Amino acid sequence: MSSLFSIPPDISFADAVFDGMMTSRAAVYRKDQTLDAYGNISNVVYTRLACTLQDGSVVDQMPCLVRNLKGEELNTPPAPASQTSYGIQEFLIFCRLFQVDSPAVPLSIRHFMQILTRTQIAQGVDYSDPNDPNAHAVLYNLTNISNPALFDHHYELAATVLTP
Image (cartoon, rainbow, N blue to C red; front, top):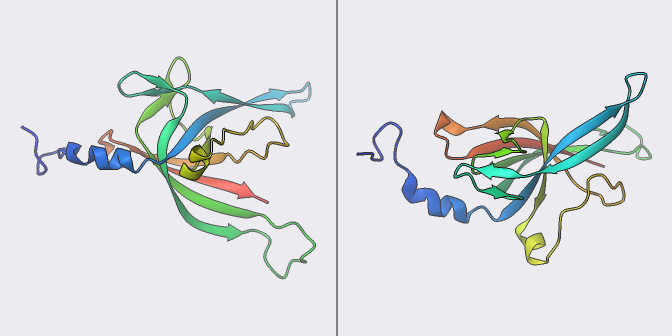
């Protein structure tokens, strides 16, 4: 019999609360690159992937919770104001465990995410095409993937976004 004081502890009572906090939705992408005859990257294409949940069901977007962490500006004074400034914003993303692609492979830092907020979902906003430069798609670059205490309950994904 599992209890709160057993190893691993039974925290299933908190699952409804945890799942209720997942108010954003994320689509997962893989970056495919084509090389030219000289070995230089000539074309980059982002491919949207299907997500396979632990119960075997396949979804096209994952419920998640996004927490905004620190940010940092890369072009700070005394740089001239006429130069373009860039900033790196860091995020922590919580979501249930899942695998991507077909056949299913584990999520890795080679994958990217595009996230819609609760407000965007309510307004009917759809994901922007990351292959269209005029779509202004924002992709979250995964920098770390954590399965806390290896309990297979959820992921904690560290991500950055480079914004002009």
